[in-house]
Length: 66
Image 1 (tube, helix red, strand yellow):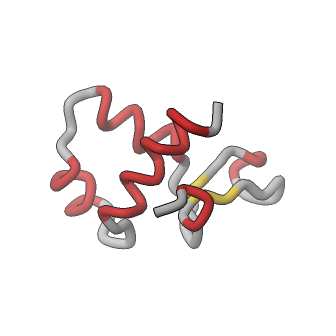
Image 2: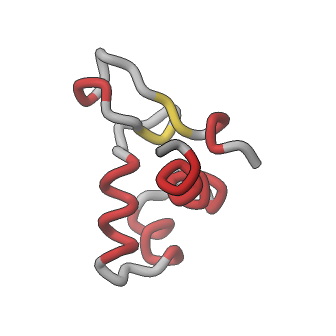
């Protein structure tokens, strides 16, 4: 899985912050939730438009894109 398939940045959406493609959910938000101890299952339940692959792409983006 390539994070590029799931993460998108557009200057017209959230000021160009990277978001999960097709949403306005910032990668930063997903990572903050994970860092705060929110489980992947809880995130997926709270944001039904997300997939497990989207969450993993956020993690991979943080590790590989920097």
